[in-house]
Length: 163
Image 1 (cartoon, rainbow, N blue to C red):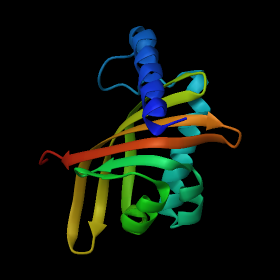
Image 2 (cartoon, rainbow, N blue to C red; image 1 turned 90 degrees about the vertical axis):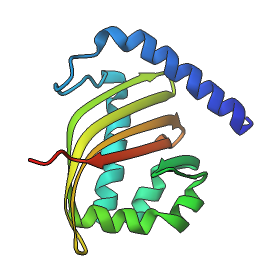
Image 3 (tube, rainbow, N blue to C red; image 1 turned 180 degrees about the vertical axis):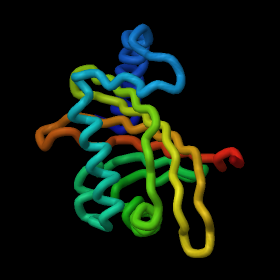
């Protein structure tokens, strides 16, 4: 299937899931809702982050679809190989020296497509920089013969407010 059709299908399914699950969302500041259908997909998201933190980059890459789209800091990586060549090592190094806490997570699944959103805070010391960032993440996953694989990642962050 051409990539444009896959993206269109994922988008349609995502929007359909969002519309159906809108009533299940909880108020801001709470833990969020991860549907039972998406719990396995959420576990893949957690395994991806754990692999980065442990510098097990081969394990992290194995959880990504070959044609994954990673959007981060205004740039795009359009495949697993491109992500591996550009940001994987830096992301693993950063994860190793910081602590990421998830403050809110939501997730839904519709058939072979799931999406998981997370909000959190990342703190630590990277080189000589003190890190204190509020983070948001969206991951879209697709279930195939080998289980759930991450098809799309969007990461964004901003400085945490001064205490």
